[in-house]
Amino acid sequence: MEPDIQTLFTIAGIGIIVGMIHSVLRMIGREDWANWMTLIGFVIVLYMVVNFIQNLFQHIQRVFHFF
Amino acid sequence: MSLRFIFGFLMLALFSWIGWDVARRYAWRVQLLIALQRALTSLETEIVYAQNGLPDIFKRLAHMEPALLSSFFLSTHRELLEGRRNLADVWYDLLNRPPLILYTDVRERQTLIDLARSLGQYDRLSEQKRIQLARYELEEAYQEAKQNDERYGKMARTMGVLFGLLVMILIW
Amino acid sequence: MRSVTIMQVVGVGLTATALALLVREERPLFAYFITLVATMIIFISVLSNVQKIIELIINLSQRAHVNALFTATILKIVAVAYIADFAAQISRDAGETSIAGKIELAGKVMILMMAIPILEAMIETVLALIPV
Image (cartoon, rainbow over all chains, first blue to last red; front, side):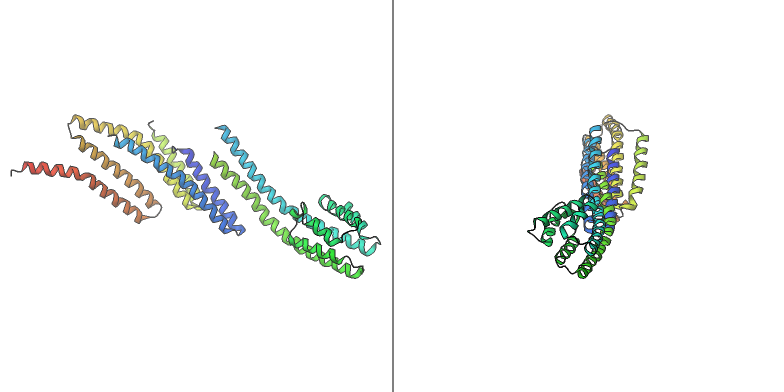
């Protein structure tokens, strides 16, 4: 997927919300669920970022290796 | 684009509703316990000062209490009139099936069933003591339920909204 | 590829900085991701402009009759340098200076490897000039 500002906001949004969920769950005492949630959020964002990196490298290859 | 927007909002609404529903369950348990305490007070009054038998007492209780407890007492009244089972069994059945099983915890169910078993004896004084004991246990259960309601209720609502937001952002 | 104005780049950069600040106190991890993605966005935006520069360089080198192999190698070296620097910077941002150092080391090694054919050609030329 093409990296643009949209996804930047998505990642920020996910980060904030996962942070809040983590705090709420930790306050309740279910710290294990909290950690799972953070891990899931991390994996989702990681997947997106890896897509971006792949996209970036394709761009670079196109620009530089053509010449 | 706007279709995803609408879908996202729908997800938000859905998860918020789920969270709020779970919170509502906790709040209802608190209400139920308050009503049960009131009913037990009335029960005590009826047993000590009136001369009616148990089935009639329950019929009068049914009229005094709202919705959930009302049908509970009405069913008790009907089952007792049929005469085949004793109070403890009747209550065991009624409490362990929906709808009441959803809004009660093992604690108050056990309290009520124990009380039911002891109501068979006709010694007024010991019955009164038993009812007071049951009321005391219910008060403890009520305190715990209120605490749970405050903690888990707010958590459930917050989690619902947060989760809805998360899904909405993911779909966006 | 569309070319990007400096205003867009500045916009992305400032927004990303603000977002990263906001997220950093909650989950520093996600702040790192935001930084990563923001740098990639800006990088990709710049690439479209870089393409024109590269075309210019190739044009000039062709007109100067420089060996095409040399031009290609130089451009590849520049690309490797940029990428390695980008990755090393991001690692250093996250506090992983050791990883950053190793990335830079790898970049230097690759550049050296790519320069080997040119060095060989140069040595052969020099040797050919020396009367045997």
